Image (tube, rainbow, N blue to C red; front, side, top):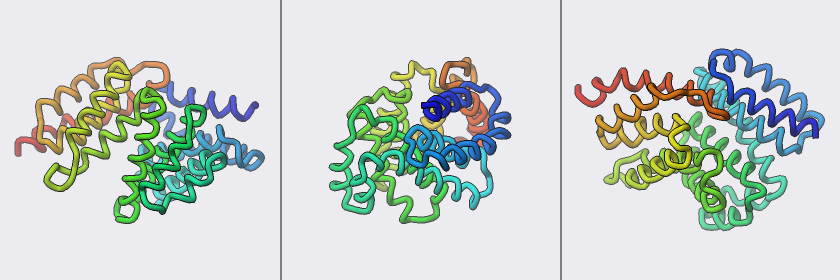
Length: 262
């Protein structure tokens, strides 16, 4: 369908841009265009996934206003839910059920629907990020973790291994004494880097930001960030996120001494 091709081509065009400011300026137009297409095809999974991904990324990367970011992530999560639960309604109906029941429902998703599953989990993770002061939202991290575990079971290399990236971040939020699992997080980060061949630079940034800072490992922190800064950001499907990763790497590296030594 034309709408499917448009959603795919739009996503690829954005991901291959090397100028984040241009994407930031153009994103509102793209979002409105997707909304207009969804008026005619409200259940089109390709359009819903594109909308969820773009709204979520715009909210978490470019928007500073917390209320606005929360509204956009609400929309991203809802569109991600619709894209998956049109075919798997029992998953959405089990979102508030015990985690074991929710994980059991996720087993119904197969390789054919992995894009929808990953988008569903990614949009939910972004929603948690923009609602981080709400403990009920933060409690949903275990469900995002279950989603990403299912993605790995189906195909751990999906989307450059970013399910491992999400699990690396989730497990590196707290030190072991408080129930965190940073060493599991480290393994997920390393696996994500291996899967992408080091091309997906945002993985190294999050590895440094979460695990290295949590574990107070300045040598690892600085090495990862220097590797990001010195890398060529241009790679099909990764150029935009790599450009953003390099910007974040410079900012983190600039505060390394203050964080680790002061």
